[in-house]
Image (cartoon, rainbow, N blue to C red; front, side, top):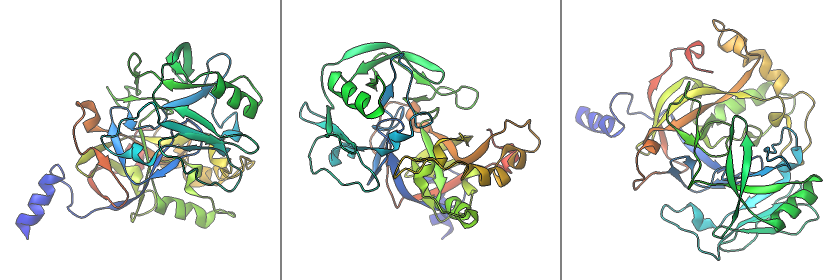
Length: 342
């Protein structure tokens, strides 16, 4: 038995308990920044995060990113990719598309193979080729980063401009020439695309359940937009995960995820914000004053842990996939939330 435990520990990377701390409950990809996510059966890990995650975003006439913080209606934009797009070695052809649509309260699937679809209430479905010649737009920006991006064309621009009521263009990250690095203060040398700052966000079902116990109206996990939702651990246990292993991949907890006042309050089924919740409740027990009392207050609240994947630093290899049901092993932990970077 000791030999078996030792062998399993070596597979996990050495150290830590051979007993899983949690299980991956779901994997969520957000192809278009601030639009609806897709729950997927598996997800390949790339140099910038999960494949397809935040590869696209919407920009205004000045090239600045639109998010739900200023356009809550983006919560209604449903995105669909071909089911096979999440296979490890799948490569799109000129016949493959992303589809977008606008949905209000009830979403439905378009039975379209190799198409990415966007839909919206009262609007036709928008199909965006996954492989096509594109023009390049310069001076595209999201938060601290600016650079060039591929323009998805006039049809996409008209579709989103009509929906939002403002001039808009859909752009795609230009991997061949652009690099967006994570903040070196927290994660040196890692890359992402159009995420807020880091390639992975991990949250737990236990944390959501604990929050819902004290909210007057329970909320779903889509208010917090994680990439990896785990289950089976204590509430907020993910705060303290310094190093975890999922399917032989090493994930490093680099920064507690501070939550803006806007997005968690937006009902993702109808795009309507709540004036205060859940932010007001989170302030009572998830603020930096509570979690990190020895640090100067940043007037932030936290839910989830930003992470990077160690293997993403090396050339692409086989088997870099995670899926629901995978066990989560904790190899190293922070001693307290006061120690965790934020």
